[in-house]
Image 1: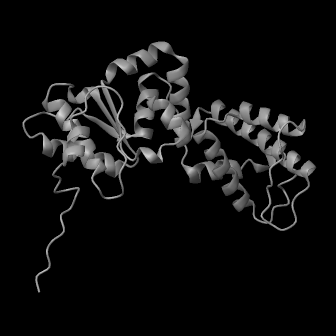
Image 2: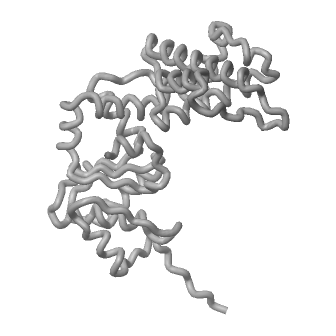
Image 3: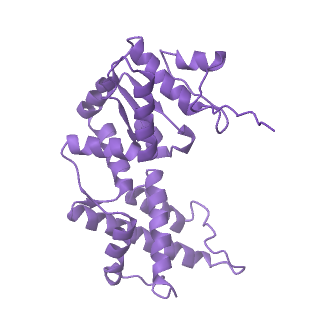
Length: 265
């Protein structure tokens, strides 16, 4: 028995009226909300093609942001397929990290990047210099470092600096905010020890940032945070970036964290 082939909404994209409106939208912000596999990325690709084809922007005046190198490469290829009569080679379709890293390079603020494994080793070799007291008894130092680096990454996603975290810990110690529960066991850690642990982590956060800055090192998260600080702290650079791009499009926008949203803004 023959089975009818289901149309692929990505490859065999035929816009309905709502999609057509989204594709041909030109002025002001636009947010497309739809389920998985319904063609959101295709709308983005077709919208880029429409903006170039209709003369609203040149390819190099469009910044299309996504989350993986493969997705960025596929996006560039699909735009070229949709615009056989135009040169779309200068389209800026890249990941958030690639855009931010490029911005830092263009402004002379680049640093040597440590990946997660490199940073783990960097800290493991210096763990005695951190002068830990509450975490030296950890049965698994490796797991402690994994948890620590995951916490620091989440801080950077939310633009929480060592100074802001230290301020929060100081408020904890003064009783101005509720002390969080930090144990999954049935026996909760006493509040005094919880505050002491937070103070110790605040010291580690500050020390690590100091060490990295001294050696001009950073992580993938630092690409985002340093680009954010540059855009918000240097009006000349910010105006140059604003003038570079007439349109900014973000694929999988629901995955953007606070720092990335601030950069887009």
